[in-house]
Length: 100
Length: 100
Length: 100
Length: 100
Image 1 (cartoon, rainbow over the protein chains, first blue to last red):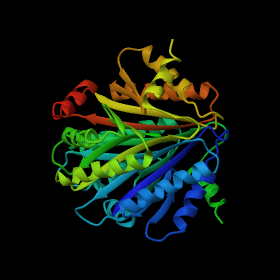
Image 2: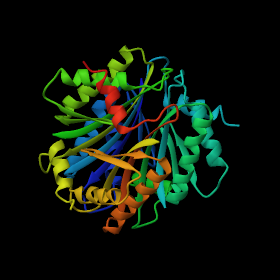
Image 3: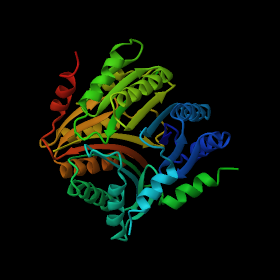
């Protein structure tokens, strides 16, 4: 189980807005159920099998090209651990338990 | 107004846990009010004046060193725009409005 | 053709040194010839087919786990364009041609 | 002494080319001598005092806005260590010494 954050920057679009590509990512993620996901203002966080996540990232990137963009810059952060099962919820709980 | 995501990786600590450093970041962010912030499973997102945010990032990094870590690897994503005021909430709303 | 930069951070190793994992990545990359690569002080840049690159990144991550690390944090930046063939060399030349 | 990599993505420019902004960054970096720097196909790596580097990053971002861009997305990776002096050259040597 890995937790991965994806941010997609379309270049050369002529508009500063990028939300329609993020919405496209969410449609792709909503059409499946094995990888959980959560939107934040700087990216989309996914939780699941790392190979399935990488395959979804590839679909999301191709969707941006399909929408007419010629250059896509993606930033991917991968948090993969093998000593225990890590989930998005448990990571948040772990921090919250240390706050007063 | 910029929106910035910070992820801090402590190296060489002998433990895979990093939540106490994230909790430290939250204490620093909670002690001020001009920069808004939001935790997600892969980082902390901040919204405010970019110079104030950079100054808070420096404080958070030093706090990790103060807690005994010898090497800190940080990943910072900065989304700065000048054509309109951008907030964390408005970015999320913009995506949600495009979802069916 | 995509250009991708990979940085791998091993967590919980008890030492601040990470060069042996970077060396492991280079051995994996040297054992193949379809993806070109270039080391810099903050990561390894690869050039080639994006699916082949993603598959190499997965091998490199598993190699770090095989070396005994329990948590691996990776940062991946992907620059993929479809309007023209982009290479590492051509990107550097493009900047250099604009310098006085 | 910290080692920092900066990548700047201009959004909404109407062209997929970004090299003129990278060239602008190099002119800013060339006009000073306390922070060393090195270009690679995916970013610019800097070595020096972390506060000076952050101040240079702010100048580089403003230069992109000055060139007419309305939204700038930057990715910054910071490798800061306090157990020994770390340089770009020594990081590369450390990996090379482990390669056969």
